[in-house]
Amino acid sequence: MTTGSGPGSHNSNSDEQDSLIRAWRALPMLKRYPVIAGAISGVLLRLMFSGEGGSSWSAMAGAFIFFAPILVGMVTVYLAERQRRRDWRYYICAPFLATSLFVAGTLLLFIEGWICAIVIVPMFALLGGLGGLVMGALCRLTHWPKPTLYGFAVLPLLLASLGTNVPTPTGLGSIERSIAVSAPASVVWQQLNHIEDIRPEEMADALALHIGVPMPMSGTTRQTTAGMVRESRWGKQVHFEEVVQDWQPERYLRWTYRFAPDSFPREALDDHVVIGGHYFDVVDTSFTLVSDGAITHLSTKVQYRISTQFNFYADWVAQLLLGNLSEVGLRLYKVRSEREWTSLSREDRR
Figure 1 (cartoon, rainbow, N blue to C red):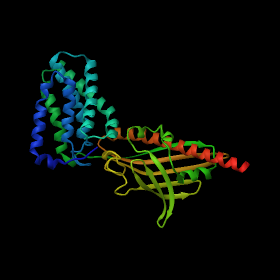
Figure 2: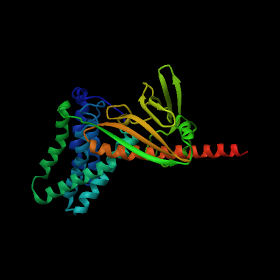
Figure 3: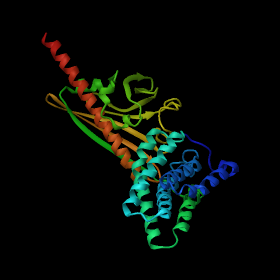
Figure 4: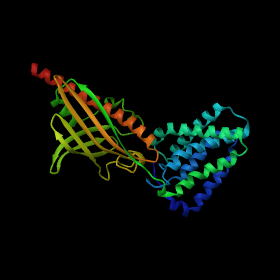
């Protein structure tokens, strides 16, 4: 997701604003194609919300996230109703299609990244359907759908103008997963601190990787003058350090994260989902190893931060993607540890 200018540049660049206003006023010309008109209205609003991350004019601002899809649904149904009466199913399905085209349009214009686009589609579809239902009811029961539509078109801009007066809450969450490994704790511990050449098939079930998140490639712990540090390398030249905070050999391991200016190359992740950014961060990760005869119970806990004006949805996404990634990671350590233990056992029998 690319960032652009803040609200100050919107005021100074009157030519851009005039062109957007002219395009907005031209939407009724597309009344024969209400779904397309609805999608275009969303793209126009997205162009207005091209501010820097953390600003009220960012595409992550609540004013845009909540009201853009509602507006898309309302425009779609309003223009469709000007043609002829539609049924209630149309009020839901047409906005769903319009919001999908809206998101696709931002991708085609390179103002949105794949990760953000895929993640936000379910929420946009629901809100678009809500907007369509509201406009459908207004068209059936009242004589003022047009003023309502104009009001909703202006509302996100008014909210964005309030700037920091609209609070952005910070939420903390955690994910815990566990797995039984048929190998001694010493072997599992070695894999946790030295795993290399991770293959795509070993991470095939990771949902995050299928929407564009780089794949982990290796993780190696080394001793430094400042303590133990695990170097983590991912695809797309992503790299960062995991600073060990608690080191109890074969029992417990916890690290925090340290990022360099070049940890995430420009094309590696969408700006809005970069770890350690305005909206999302991973606080720490820990592993607990409990020996039970020939079995080692391996547990992990990941703590994260989200800072958005729609934390209820962002937290659901984080739980889904991080939870799944944790499960896939544990299975990777299980398979590698059991394979290593089997190999060592064969050597001992020779």
